[in-house]
Image 1 (tube, rainbow, N blue to C red):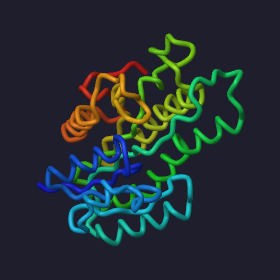
Image 2 (cartoon, rainbow, N blue to C red; image 1 turned 90 degrees about the vertical axis):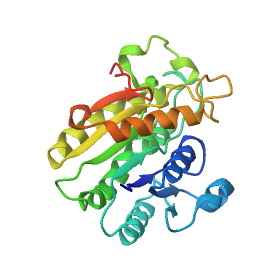
Image 3 (cartoon, rainbow, N blue to C red; image 1 turned 180 degrees about the vertical axis):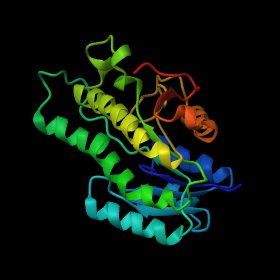
Image 4 (cartoon, one colour; image 1 turned 60 degrees about the vertical axis):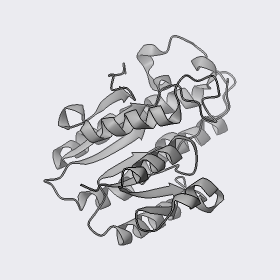
Amino acid sequence: MVKTYIVTGASRGLGFEFVKQIAAAGNVVFACARNPAASKALVDLVDNKKVFAVKLDTVSDESIKAAAAEIDAKAPEGVDYLINNAGICGTMGLDFEASTPEELTNVFNTNLVAVNEVTKAFVPILRKRGQDQVKKILNMSSILGSIGQMEDADGWGFGVAYCVSKAALNMLTKMTANKLGKENFVVFASHPGWVSTDMGGDKAPTTPEQSIRGQLANLEKFGKEENGSYYDFEGNAMIW
């Protein structure tokens, strides 16, 4: 059965790999990005039948509303899955003493506030699938948001803002799951692994293809037992 997906941050990296694999499986995907036309790889995939490009700046209320209206019009029967992938790493290596209010606010606005606002805007589109059908939301988190595994005070080179934003996203995921679970939603946080992308670097042991293949498998198989959970791309439960 063909499924319909929304992916944010879809112009490159893991977001683009989500779009590529979803499209290859014959599903419908709305690929959301600030400037989709700037990604030749994404433009080449768009056919306006199965793959649609949608302009979305996740930190702009107006852009979120416009994107939601566009998707709602093109998917009148609703959407099955929302993948909140868009995020930024901020300035690498800043500890709490070096982090500025501007740095923290900038990273939190994208990695936390924007996820909440995008989810609020898109959930009504998922609800159109009806109470009897499972709807799913994947929030892209990180092992760097795991308080129980943060043994490195410097966050493995990442700044305080990024790590704390992902920890906050984990709590947002849990609370969203608690609210939506009664409506037959499954909401979970996903650690993609250390992936060889612009953010992860070329020493990372996991390819984007491997990470996304695993995360899509999780998204497909997870049920109500996994609502409000935190897993890595290989299906292992993460420590909060």
